Length: 478
Image 1: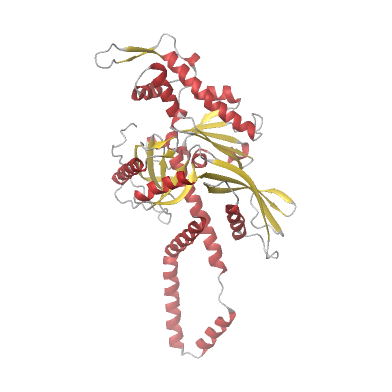
Image 2: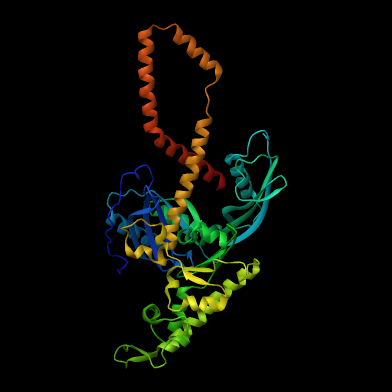
């Protein structure tokens, strides 16, 4: 399915029974070449139903960073208008936003806490406290912590524990992968989103969002490198034995290939982009030496003949450079071709180049495949959304649902812990004993009615409570 960026895309709202209790999560992918807004909700089978979709050309972003805020705001609003046109019933207030750019850095840290109440099992609250402590880690001035991701945990002398909740012990600790970014770059993203009339629910590193969209649990365990080739950056996330081992942002991607074609073949940028998409190949040897592309001449100039083999040679040179960076990062973390049994998963718009899988396998020495986000999508979605181009945006929605499930479980656990003090119970029994039978019966009916009302309002209270809680957390972080 092809369309112009401003074309209205009609998306049927798949609001079915069984999904009504699920929230609508919105992902906003602010890319170098496009800005996409997708709204989705999980159905009763755990699949993502797309309720709205819009996109627009991106003009204010270079290499993954927002430089021109006004242009970015216009593009976000255009994408939002297209999304609302696809489903006028949508009410979008909060969005999960992807972040990338060469300013992104990562570091490894270690954290431990000595437990106060060792007679109880380790709880989620203690793990959350351990993670919160890592936000106090020293980082260079001008940087800001975007995310803290726990790797393997330890409880006393036991190591490599994936999830310590329910364990008993005195000391619990973990290794952490901390992702940082430039404060100004983060501020520009937040300002662009807020001036578009939205609120940033969370900033998510783009390779992590893409990973959740194209990966299954078996990929995590086998070990896999996710390579998201976008317009301005190539994002890398490496997983091994179910743990995130490394993230990196490589400042070369599809736009660099387009610029190389423009300069090398002496054509316009729009012509270079069109040639890359329609005729580009990542292996020059796989193209015909006698095939040519005719480019119309400008202002009465004669038409230009472009060799398809020369075009492929330019594409291969730049793609080989990007894959050399990937290989370098894999060696940096000690995960060579003997460790990652899941190989390389290519996603993003740049992954659709012909013969890219073969070039990737040749350069990295690992098996490769294209990662599509359709595994998580419910039946009946727009065909275009199953393309690797939208992996990041689909992944942002999935990240939102992960947060929702985590917060709901935590809330339910705390809700169950609330007990009425024994003294109040005794007072209530004493008062009830002095009442006439008719009044006691009336009170019982009122009590049942209150319980039903409480159940009906449960999710509304839960949502408001969680929003307030996380607003306070965000204020503390800022």
